[in-house]
Image 1 (cartoon, rainbow, N blue to C red):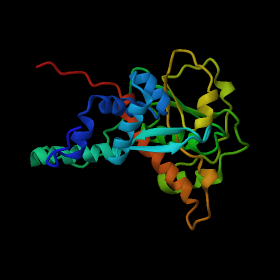
Image 2 (tube, helix red, strand yellow):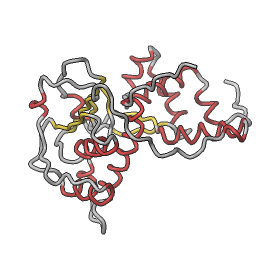
Image 3 (cartoon, rainbow, N blue to C red):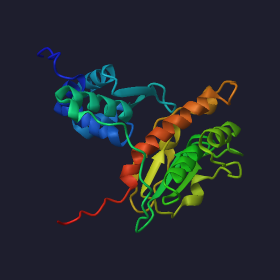
Image 4 (tube, helix red, strand yellow):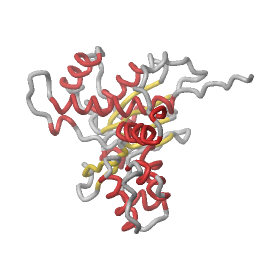
Length: 260
């Protein structure tokens, strides 16, 4: 293997390889395990693992142990880091190509048909209701969004309620966890699992929804006392909000081209 040219930005060196680019595009859509990436790329596991190590070393990809099977790991593409790396690569080519800070999103357009999104986790007490609330908030209610769990708890976790109220001005104190079974027959465009356990038991839904997995640890399992609520819930809400911001362009109807 030829040594990398130090004059070439690291992002370009990483993304230019065909297999690494394929891995990036797969992980841009969902978190996956190595064996799933093997199936999707048709490449041997040792080669996939090698290139994932390079992507992790470049800070573009992270890995987390599965909460369903600790012998397995889920790989996640850090889209925020990709955006910064892409901007640095553009600036290295010409200063005018450096990307400006991301502007605030425009008002959410009213689609012909509201896209429907389901967020699922085991207890429907923290991760999935946080995601439901944040997506509804960011789209001004123009997405039909709900959440449910395979083994719903008795109530929404109070720290999830507190984090949403204090950091986003959203009140879900009156919401109760739901069971996935009550959604049988509902049509969804996206079914997004937020925990590794529920991904294995999530039922099939009509209409062939797009299945996406976000491997996010249960904040209740890692929560510890803090002066402004549990830091684990704050971190979880921030990660979910980042992922939702990157989901929005996929839900927004494509603008119509204006003919000259």
